[in-house]
Amino acid sequence: MKIKNDNNLDFALILAKHGVSKTKFRIHLLNLFYDKESLTVKEVMNKSSNLINKVTIYRALESFEEKGLIHIVPSSNNIIRYSLCNADECSASLHKHNHGHFICNNCNQTFCLENYKSPDIKLIEGFYINSLKLILEGYCKDCYLN
Amino acid sequence: MKIKNDNNLDFALILAKHGVSKTKFRIHLLNLFYDKESLTVKEVMNKSSNLINKVTIYRALESFEEKGLIHIVPSSNNIIRYSLCNADECSASLHKHNHGHFICNNCNQTFCLENYKSPDIKLIEGFYINSLKLILEGYCKDCYLN
DNA sequence: AAAATAAACGCAACTTAATTGCGTTATTTT
DNA sequence: AAAATAACGCAATTAAGTTGCGTTTATTTT
Image (cartoon, rainbow over all chains, first blue to last red; front, side, top):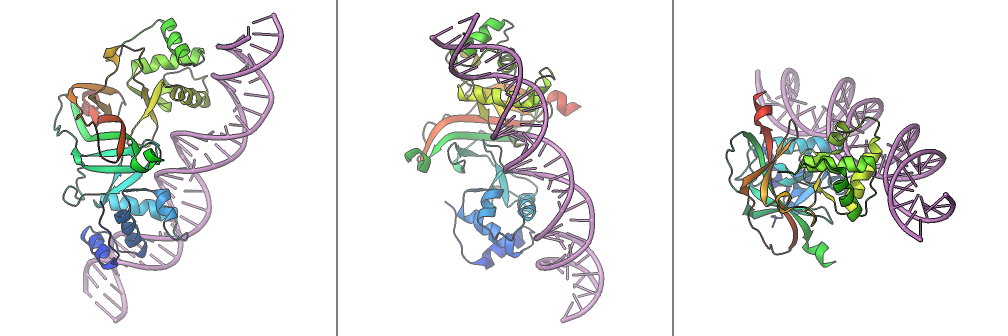
């Protein structure tokens, strides 16, 4: 479960720690990620002032990712979805997400399964490994019940 | 490893069983899936006559998916990638993929990693699990060296 | 604190994957 | 073999994501 925090000062601090400029929008954006498991550009758009440009959203997400704040999570509907990084797992230089991801085939939300790790495969002869993913698909509680 | 079958009659039969019209292109398309772990529209295009329209490819894939022949597999580059379903008609060697899959980000070939199994997760509270995949991405030997 | 530097922003135009409508052709059903 | 149904090709469109550039805002330096 995510930690909810209404105090903007804390978010500004997190941004500063990661070397991300603390603009009004980027504080707001980080706030959104603390409220929701994963977000797409469209979902961010719907939760932001309609004065904010979509390019700004794309660039902010790109910056957050480069600075190790968020990471791309697998999705099945070919729309890029981001999720908060685990503070001790990730750094600007290296994203390390060895936890599983659950994709709901109905609402398309992606959930990080922190307790389910993918096997720790370091090296396979003949392959240069960039990423390793444990992906589960099905229905989340809300979609399964309804 | 996929079983290669040059006899069109068998593919026509599989199509018929799934209620898919057996046109020349659709037989060819099914053929492609028996040769390759996963395919994108672009890859299908490159392996088909250039007389075939891209809309035909999109619609054939859509139809195959609706009829339970293929399914969308997660990809990292937000381009839809399909893979054969675990159908009853097919041999045991072809399916039951509890082993990992390696996707080369350069040549897009996929490799079965028979020796690397995905963890045996049966149940997670709050989720109804349909499928579980262990996906590795990076570069295969040929693409890494060149 | 002001000036200099760097990063973020908005706009418009662009690229590319994927979709839709419609008339035509091929396949399936009877 | 005719009627019904599904696939096909073409052209136009939608939508996600990207790029260039001039302007504004934030950060760093003096």
